[in-house]
Image 1 (cartoon, rainbow, N blue to C red):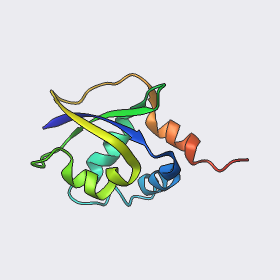
Image 2: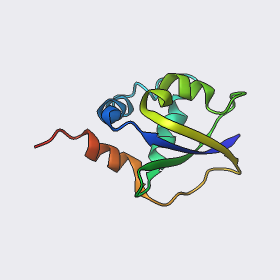
Image 3: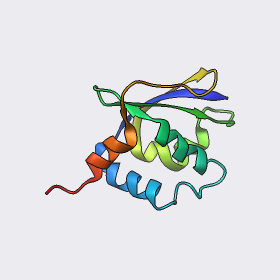
Image 4: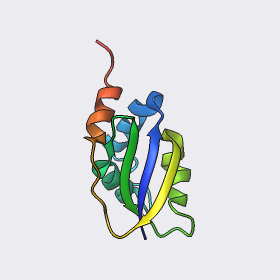
Length: 106
């Protein structure tokens, strides 16, 4: 089933999330790592800081495994809503936003 997901990033974890996405740790996670990475590539962040993406999941509880292994470490107030297929969302690309938060201050 496909879900529309909305959540608030814990900004203090941005560097760790970006590192795990870049170094392949999340991608290697079975059975859903590749989908998590693809979802973060589709994700956008709105002006009010809400991150939104669509994702496919076959857990009996929406994103149960994804939340227990990744999302609950990095996001708060995660809400899912069933949708038909992958959705497009309006906002800044999340990975670009994440890069900006993860960069060390100069």
